[in-house]
Image (tube, rainbow, N blue to C red; front, side, top):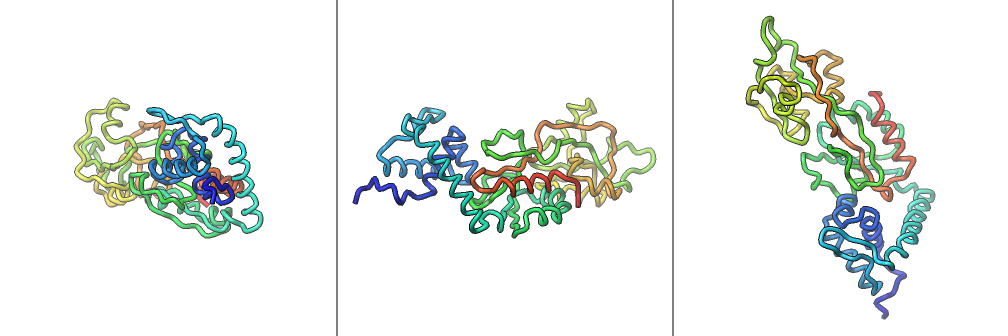
Length: 288
């Protein structure tokens, strides 16, 4: 049998090629598909051997399409797009199931208040996977990922959930008459958001006390702040419910705007345009 038979090329090899060509690196393709860089490299290697053609020129820190790879890419994109559109039209694929990978804090504080609107807009089964700190915990079948950063991921579809603005928050009962909030205990949160050192540097306030409580999720830190255990540097968009109910109050008029925030991310081949639009409209809107 001819090893160059093209009628049974594994689709996962072709998808790896398209993702690497579009993002310009095996690392970018790995981040988009949820695979490892070595898995992407291996799949493209299998594809090149089957085709008996080099598709990429491997360089020290980058890759470039060969002439053959550049010529084949438009046909691959057309074929993948046609496959996706026909499967959605005939079988409802990508409309029935949705998997969202996000941190506990985003699920609890941002998605949950909008869940009714999200369910109505998507009309199918929604599975949530919690992600703590590291994006390496992403699964290959995650349709959508929500990550904190500057938006420089290689995903074809991405949109910020909200502009990040932070301020120190505390339970009202912690603020006794004549007590400065600067003297209150601090609550710290591990992760990518700015911390108390950033707050002091950006606002010109004195160095803050060393936090005696540190949490690895923002949700847990908020729970401690509600219980009167200290002041937390809170994300105002995520704290809407606590601020509206009065469970937490700002203790300073200063605000810390940050260039990073949570982003909604998806690969174009994993989700339909209508479903993506429904997600963006649901998660960027106010609580239902």
